[in-house]
Amino acid sequence: MFQTDTEGPVIWLDNVRLQEGVAIQNNPDDFIKLYYNPTLRDSTVVLPTGAFRDVKNQAYANSFVLRPFTSVVLLRDTVAVPAADLSLSLDSDKRVVKVNELVSMRLRVRNEGNTKAELARWTYRLPANNQFVEGNGQAFQDNVLTGTVFQLNPQADTTFSITVRPTAPGLFRMTAQLTTATSHDSDSKPNSGTGDGEDDASTAELVVGGVTSAVFESPNPNQRLLPAVSSNQPASDGTKADLSLRLVVGKRALSLGELVSFTVNVANVGGLAADGVQIQNVLPEGVELVSATNWTVSGRTMTTTLPAIPANTTASASFQVRVTTLGHWINQAQINTSSVGDPDSTPGNGFINGEDDQAQVDIRVR
Image (cartoon, rainbow, N blue to C red; front, side, top):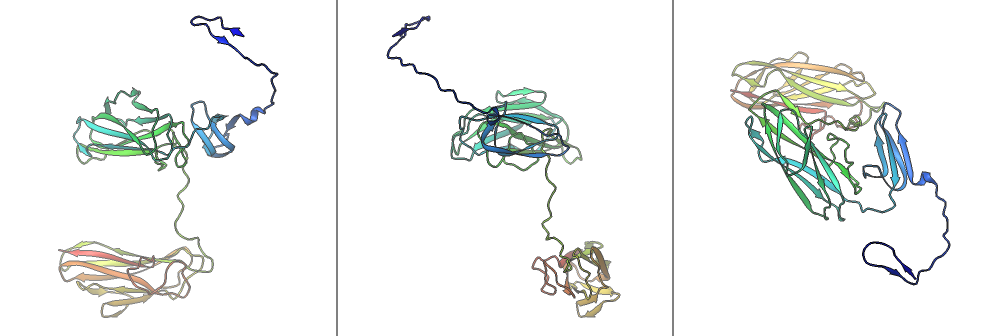
């Protein structure tokens, strides 16, 4: 039997059993990791199985991106914290205001997940000429407002009220983001910048003092390097020509009797030259043809065959009309025939099915 020798009530311990401890050897590398990126490019770090945290209590799992010449120390998270799905939105009570008019902002953090979210923090950086007035008791320093969400139940949200005063005319783009999250989030990375489109960041715009060219934006110092925009077009096929058509008009708003020129441009971005490319153009009712070199005309339908179009070049054909009737008129053109196949369009199949070998342009006669 033991008696504790401490201040306060006496505590008695009875039936205490002692036994020899068992030492277990652990590899420190299994519990602490140091990662460093010595290159000029972002580096993707693939983590071992399990959850990790940095010294700011930020959760890491699976992989993360390390910016150039930065490092991070990660500790294995031995106490599992359920994942959550936090999102942030920022909006204002009005979009168009006067200089020095008070504006009420609303910042909302929502847990879209099915488990409780633990501690998270957000940051709202004010742009230049946007004066902070009141922030719902949140910390404000060096033009940066920060707030804390201690816990958030599943499918619940919490809202913070912020009042600002724009002091100059211009377009204000104000952004906020989550900068720390204890719970892992599968579709966003806290403090990764406000320009990556993730749902833990949001932008609100204000137009102040009418039309002006001035633009004031919240600073974005922690933006991770974004990948280059990928084309949505198929890769060039060396066995095909990839033709597209663009229709250009010299002027869209015209007076009765005025002359206007149209130009049809056909580009070949494929790997094979194209010949035998015939353009078909249909004139609207409100115009009459004035000149059309190398075009064949039948009623309101015009056709012309272009010279061979090598890969990565463009060929053009033009004509001129006079507007004869008041109204809104639409001119249509398409590639009617081609000697080679095209990977994403079919020649001669109409003007309005959305393929890139057809186009239309409108004019208004007043």
